[in-house]
Structure formats: C-alpha cells, structure tokens
Amino acid sequence: MRAIEWVADPDPAIRLLDQTLLPDHERYVDVRTVDALVDAIRRLVVRGAPALGGAGALGVVVAMRQAEREGWSPKRRDAEVDRVRDARPTAVNLAWGVDQVRQAVPRGSAAVLALAEQVLVQDEAANRALSRHGADWILARVAVGAVRVVTHCNTGALATCGWGTAYGVVHELHRRGRLGLVYADETRPLLQGARLTSWELQHDGIEHVVQADGAAASTILRGLVDVAIIGADRIAANGDTANKVGSVALALACQRAGVPFVVAAPSSTVDLSVATGDEIVIEERDEDEVLGFAGVRTAPAGARGFNPAFDVTPHDLISAVVTERGVAETGAGALMTAVAG
Image 1 (cartoon, helix red, strand yellow):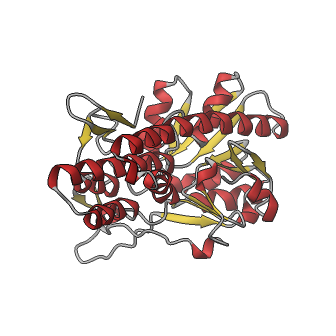
Image 2: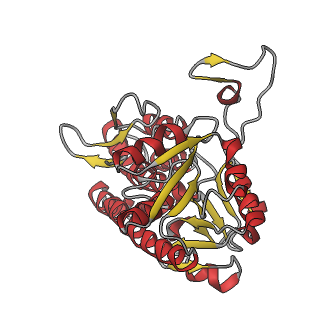
C-alpha cells in the first residue's frame, strides 16, 4: 500500500490514502493546492513523521505548480511553501522534507519533483535498513523463540513512504519467523493503533490484539511482552524522543520490568539542533478530539479538553535508538550523532 505518491495522470497531484476513513473505507484524495495539502496534514489524512517528510517535499511541487497556474509572485510562492513547512510543529520530518528540495526551486518544478521522488524512495530504503538493524539488535538480546511485542500508534506503511519504522521492525521479525503476539495500543484520541495498525497487521497476516492505552503498562509488568517498539516524530541530540502521546508510559513500565524499549525512526527524525526534549514544541490539537468521538460528544457540556498530541520520553528510559545508519544504545553525544543524518 502507498500512503503517499505523486501521480501524473489525469492531472498531476499528490495522491494520499485518506487515513481518517480507515478501516471502513479505502479512499484516495488527489491534492493539487496548498490549501488542500495543509488541510490534509492538519486533519491527519496523511500522518506519520516519514510520510509527512514526503508530503513536505511534494508540497513544494504543489506550491510551484499552483504559483504557475495562478500567477503568484515569488514572495507569495515562498510564503505558501512555508505554510506547508509549518503545518504541524512537532514532527521534524515535515520541515525536513521541504528543506530537502527547496534549494532546487530556481531550476523549476520538474527538478524539484525529481528530488521529492528521491525523498520517497530513500525513505522506504531507510525503513527497510533500520528494520533489519532493529530486528538484529532485539534478537541478540531477547532470548525467546517468538518475540512478543507491544507497540504504540501507527508506524507502518501508512505512516511512511513505504514499509514502516517500528512496524517495519515488527514486520522483519515476522519475516524471519521470530514474531509472537503483537499488542497494539489503541492510541487515543483518534485510535491510530486500533484503526490503522490493526488494519496493517491484518493485511500482513500477523497475530495481534488491540488493547486500551491504559492496559499497556500492566501488560508489560505482567511479563506478557518481551520488547516495546515505537516510532518517533523528533529525536533530540541527547536522545530524548517525542512520539504520540502515551509513549512515555510504556517506557516507564519497561524500565520497571527490565524490558527493552526501542525507538525506530529514519535518521531524518534525529534533530541535532535541539539539545534536549525540553526544546521540542508539543502540538496541542482541538479539544473536541478528547471530548467526543466520531462527532458524538462524550464529555459533559461545559467540560474543557486538554489534547497534547505528543509526549517526550527521556533518553535514559530508552534502550536503543535505531535508524538506517545503525543502533545507539544510549542517547549521549557521539552515539546519537552516529545514527543521525
């Protein structure tokens, strides 16, 4: 499956698999304007740090083509590119994707498109490489025949330009015949685990159960899992990691239980300009996402919502950070630099 790709016919566009409609409806959206792309990013039609990197790169092409159609000035075009770049503040890959291609703007949209398509291809290659590194590291440290995994949010092909990050490691363990039961956290408030990860696991024929986020710590402490694997939206220079809210609870339980807690992400997610997790901006989404579900209010009238989309796991709770460049078993200094882009 492809969560994001560029299509040339019948009219050039970014084609997105609308993840707000899964698992009930598999529908694609063709995006040809900056307004439509920013809306798709903010509504989570496209989501996941690596996929947002692809959206950022292709978004520059969309802005350039719209500028040509509508006669924008270079200043207006650049401002529209910035709108794409800044559509979600926590995930570093969105801005990274824009920056990977922006220098080619003076050479025309065809040159930018060629670079953007490289971003997509390279992301899938990086995901496959980091999945092999992650599986090797886990199998060297978990002395069981079938590794039981707990994971959080969605980190598969839907969240990337192909294959997956934390989900990619799970898939690699499955490919090697070394995967046991997968516990997929439902992931509040939009149920990316229940709706999306479970959908991908079913497609791949992987045995799994969906559990409430609040059950995850107990599942770990009861000895029902051998490793926790999550993705990342931004990794600071010291290894502190921002990921979907609820991730840090798994890390705390893993530390108590002596279970490895692994972060898997492409090197583009490591942001060496951010010293620690304290500097990572935490996106706060609309309170309606926690005050109700699917348009139906579940909280009392007048109740207020608090809806941080991410939390930060301190580096000393993380057993390993895995990228396509290798594995860092501690978040400190040179080791994080070694796995960064």
